[in-house]
Length: 557
Image 1 (cartoon, helix red, strand yellow):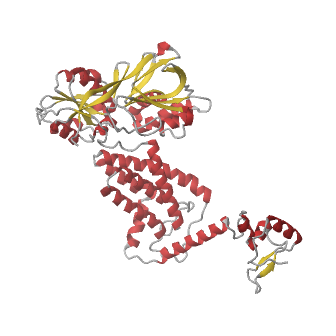
Image 2 (cartoon, rainbow, N blue to C red):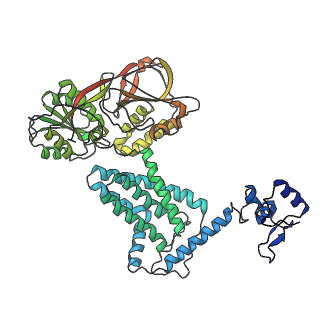
Image 3 (cartoon, rainbow, N blue to C red):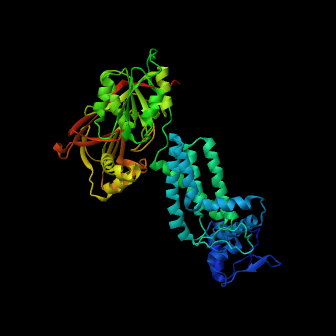
C-alpha cells in the first residue's frame, strides 16, 4: 500500500511496521507517477526516512550527506562552491590601477610589518591616546596570529586557490602554509579594531580602510579565498575585543562626581607659588620637566631621580609651596596627595605615568589640560582611602597582586615594564604560592586577593577600573576566597582578566572601614599594594576613608 502526499503524517508505528515489511513508499524523486518503493538498498533508515520526508515530519535528525535538514557535508560543499565562485569573480574583475597598488600593500603587510610601522608612528605622536592605540593594536595581533597560524591553519588544512588562468601581473607570492583562515586578514582586523577602541575617528577610519584593503588584496592577488579572509577578520576582531579583559579601556575623562569648592582667583598665571615635583622615574616622557617649565615659567620645578626618597622630596616641596604640582604616575600621585594634605594645600596632578587612573578620572590627560585647570582656579574636594597611616587614591590590595608587583619591579629595569609583568605572573604561578590566612572583619578566611577601592567602582570583578564618584564616603571591597575548587591559576586569571566566572568564591560589598588581621605569622606583617606601590604593613590594619579631605584642581566642566 502506498501513501500519497496528501495523506496525514506518518506515525512512529507506521514507520516501524512498514519499514519492517518493505512496504514503505513515498514521493518519487524522478518517476512519472510521483511514487516509488523504498528498498533495503537505500542508505540507512534515516536516509529512507528523509527520502519520504518522514524525518522532517517526526523531527528526527538526518545523517550527513543525505540532503536533509542537518546535512553538514552538503552545506560545506555549497559554501565551498560559493567561495570558489566569488574568488573567480574577483579574479575576472578588472579594476584599473589596483593591480599596481594592492600587491604592494599585501607584501607590506607580511609579518605585520605594515602594522608595526603604523604603531610606531602613533607612538611617536607623543599623545597618550595614540600610544594606547598602538599598544592595544600590537597586543591584539599577538593574540590573533598564534590562533590563526598555530591552530586554525593546522586544523582545517585547506589548500590554496588554483592559480590556473589567474592574471599573472596580480599574482602574489603564494605561501606554503594552508589557506584557511587568512593570517594577514586576522592581523589587519585585529589592529584596526584595537585602534578604533582607543583612537578618534580621524585616525581609526584611515586605519580601518587600510586594513580592509589588505584583506581584499589577499583575494585580489590570488592567495586566499574570500571565506579565508572573512574567517581571519572575525578572529582578528575577536582578539582585539579580548584585549579589553587583559587591558581595560581608558577611564572616562572627567565623568566622576566631586565636591565643588570656592574657586581660587588670586593664582599667578605664570606659576609663582607653585612647586612642581617631576618624578623622572615614572618613565612616560623624559621631556616632562622641560614641558612644565615652558607652561609655568614662574614655577619652581624639582626633578626627582630614581633612587631619591620621593616622599621626602615631596614633603620638602609642599613646605614651601602654595600649590603642590606632581608629575608622575598613580604611585607618585598618592605620595603627593599625602604631602599636600599634611600642609593643607591643593594638589595639581600632572599625568605623566603609565595609566594615570586618578588624573584621568578627574579629566586630566595632558600637561596642557593640567595647566589650564590651574589657571582657571577650579578646585574640588575628593575622598582618599587610608591604610596603616598611608593614603591611597585608587586602590589598596593584599594577596596575589602585591606579589606580582614586587616581582615586576625586580625585573622591569632590565627588560621593561610589560615583559616584567608577564614574567612576574609566570613566577607567581610556577612557585608554590598559597592563599593568605586572614581575619577579615572578624571572619577567618583563606584569601587569594583582597581589593579595597577608594569610592565605588562601576565595573565588575577583582580588577575594576571605572568610578563615577570621588566623594561617596565608601570603600569598594572585593574578596576572592580560596577553596579546593578555585586553584591558583584560576585565581590569577580572575585577577588580571576582570574576574570572569568567579561565582560564589567572589564576595563584594561596600563599607566605610575594613579590618584585616594576619592569621599566619604576625611578625611577618602584611604585604600590601596601594596605587601600584607595595609596602609591608603591621599584622593588623584598618582600611578607612577620609571623606573630601584632598583638594585637587580639575578642568572646568
